[in-house]
Length: 191
Image (cartoon, rainbow, N blue to C red; front, side, top):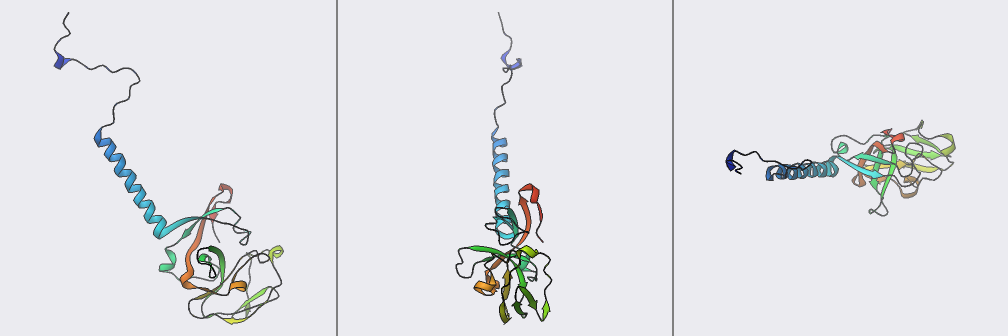
C-alpha cells in the first residue's frame, strides 16, 4: 500500500495540540515585556510612585493602609501651594517619609493660638479638619524663610508635624499626593 508522494501529503496533528511557539513570537513577547518594564520604571522613577499610608494623622482625607499615587513630577515645574498634601523625608530621620498638608509657604507669617491657625494675620479656614480632630495647641509667631514649608496633619489631636519638628525644607519634599487607588471604596483624587 502506497501512502503517496510525501511532498504532497497533508500533515495531521492530534486534536487539542497547541502549535509550537515560533522564535519570532517569543522574541516579540520578550521585547514587549522589556518595553513595559522600562516604561513602568520611568513612570515610577520620574512621574508617579505608589505609596501606602501608615497611620491616622491625615484622617479623614487619608486612612491608615490606603494606597495612593504621589506625583513626583509636578513640583519640578509648579510651586508648592498652601493646602497641597505632600510627601517628604522626615527632617529628623530622612530614611522615613511623612505625608502632611502644607499650611504655610515661604514668606508666610504663621502662628497658632489654641488650635486656630493664623497665616499672614488671617484665621485659616480649614474645612478639611473636622471639629472632633481639632486640638488646643499653640505655636509662636514664625516667618517662613525661603524654601521652608509649615506642614500639619488633618487629625490635629495625634499628628506629629511642623509644630513638633519645625518647618520642612523644600529639598525634603518629593511628591504631591494625587490619587487613592486602594481600597476601591475610597478611590479618588486627594484634596
